[in-house]
Each structure stands twice: as C-alpha cells, then as structure tokens.
Length: 71
Image 1 (cartoon, rainbow, N blue to C red):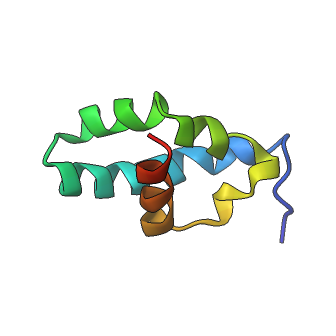
Image 2: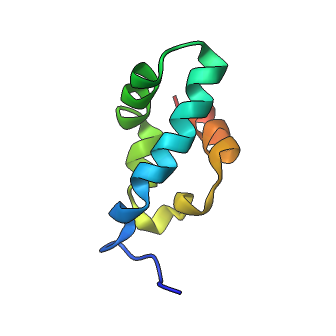
C-alpha cells in the first residue's frame, strides 16, 4: 500500500471530485459540468487538495456535508 503524501495526493483528487460532483449534480439538479465547476471553485476543493486536512479520507457523502458547511 502506498502512503498518500502531498507529493502524490493529486493522483486521487480527480476520483474524489468526480464522486462529489455526481452527488452534487443529483442533489442540486444541475448538469455534471456545472457540478464539477462548483466543486473546483470551492473552499472544499482547496481544503481537499491540502494533504494535511486529511479530507481525502472522506467519502462523497461526508465531502458533500463538508461542502455544505463551508460554502
């Protein structure tokens, strides 16, 4: 198993964003492109991209809750 570090976190970010964007699109009734834009432009993505926050451990539901709390 490979440890997630600041140097390799970028490898899992697209997966995390896609999972969150699918949930976002479903919950807010927007298309997937708008959902992806919203995620990438959010404080949640900024925090997710920082390894030390450990948000990459979260699943899509927990990330959606985090997103809603940090809009």
